[in-house]
Image 1 (cartoon, protein in one colour):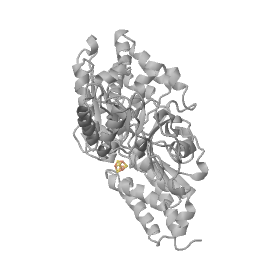
Image 2 (cartoon, helix red, strand yellow):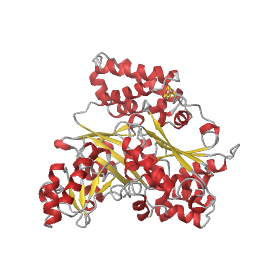
Image 3 (cartoon, rainbow, N blue to C red):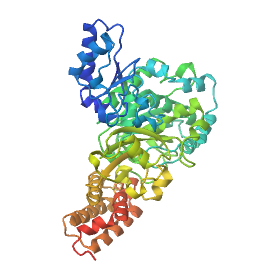
Length: 526
Ligand code: SF4
């Protein structure tokens, strides 16, 4: 019995469902034969809590603790599937006995999420049983040249999944080539996911924490790393607990610490908890925060690969980037590079939310169109409403209007239409949403989260927000629209870090595609 214990289903009582199963299995004297497994997120959060029962693969949806006696008695004792709880797809469609057959999964390809919902994230044995530590074991046993590992990541074409899309292999090469004054080099993981609506990294950490630990260890081997840090949000208590447990288990198994697997390679990882500042997802602010200072960005260069954490060469990748690494090494760079588009290889995880039927976590090959994500995987906009736009990239991204719904989702296509991949939040809007309000919402988030270090962002975002409020209050003028645009361009040019530089994106993209909505609010509509 697999029970989703990601944050979504946990908030809908999945721990009580597990307790109820354990109690009922004992009563039915099945507790020795049937195992209850806590898994990470299955992805289809809209129908949670989800319980899967094998070998039938029956997918029970919206399960409550009160449903459990019936499931145990009917399904496990009598061998009869409880039809009323089965997930039914479509209008009067067939009951789902395999999630893989659903519209939701058919267009997906799970690489970063391959173990989420499949294994118990708190068991290193289950991770090893799913080819975990195969890549690291091969590297250490065969004494693979670290440069060959870097070359494999370069050949895969993997680009950073945290937002900027910088080639991962190139970043590894820069860090490998950098010389540390005392031999210390850091390998860090950015798990400070903070975009409104984003929960990709949280789900990977909750569902498959060992994949990140193994990838960081391989990265350390490749670049000469000696010490590792995972900077994770304190607001992700389940992820923090599972990461801590995973680190301890990996140490017990000789997979972290001194002389890993009996080799002469040593590397260990510590957790650092972020206190919820969005700016700490910016790499230089993150490192400043780990150093014990207030999390504020610092100018680049020097880049982290040369002089990063504690002034030493530092490799910093985000959770989803690391989650791809062992798959690439186990399957080969060419197999990874064959997925996706010419310049965006592999898959991308999106947190699908907003006005969409199938809210959840999806992973699709790069180049999949927005239409496939919204209509086929997401099940369309509920209530018969019309799709109006989708926001990608959170407060740093832009809105893609309905007329561009056939845009392939990859780094370059999104940038070309004024949006960006970002880390993977994808929020759908319908005909009832006011796009000026949407821009105002994201900007108000940035005003709150600006660290205040540089004047263009500290003052500029507030002035921009005030102008948007003037417009939505019905007091704006056409001249204000010109001022907004001018302010946006100045902010992009002069802010110190990416938070400020990208803050105008939601405003500019809504102005580009929904200018008539801004004009409908202003008093002099000429
Ligand atoms: Fe801080 Fe904003 Fe300047 Fe970045 S752009 S350093 S968040 S004030």
